[in-house]
Length: 343
Picture (tube, rainbow, N blue to C red):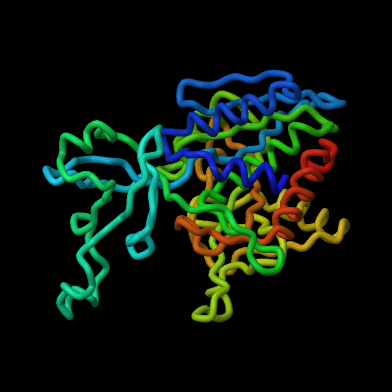
């Protein structure tokens, strides 16, 4: 599963531009899936037949898209002006490498050198208008041969294994969840299950809204990466969640209050199986659950998330042991008898 996640994180897939990720997944799951279809938004909806049929459909969900950039202008000097696709902190992008468009044109996010800034300027985060992407062209005409307006860009950040059980990658949010679902699809399942690889989560959970309406699940499990702030400047509950302490079971966030019975069920499974788990100690962020749990007549929804440092940056960091905890709990939950789910 870890090697699969690495491969997924290497793919370019900014919100609205998930084609490469979707095609990779389709190729991988073709021998294992019972049915594969793509809806008008670009969500990939996969049905996997299990050993038993469910009376109440169960949907597992993870999003294919990542935060990135979109080109909105090319200056006369050949620089690229851009905006963000998804929530990116301007503080973390200065000097970072990017890959622009389908061809992956290399560029650098630049700004005025520190030597040329005023004391007041150095106290502030630069505005987007003060930043540009430098692709090495000297004239607009040369840049236009390589890049078009509306092209997307992703951070160029190689995957690295760090220290003890840690991994650094660009798009762990949420190629991690996609990797878990791939592993589940490639295994034998106890019950029929829908797996949905959604689009445009980072710009408002849009794909999940359409997918849930079409699939009509009674139960949903969202697999995600979530904010961990377990760094020296954080204390107590401000750490939110901690790497190495296990899967984050959804309780409440900025988009959903999760189903309490499913929360209790997951907690019980974790304790029975000896799987490490935690909850977020601060209400922050949102997932596809925001759209799913209020779809149609309502969907009983829960989530399992991977604690991730520096999320929405070029270098997200997570713990491989937490990945394994999420996978184990996801596998056990979708294997539960309907009596347990409905309890």
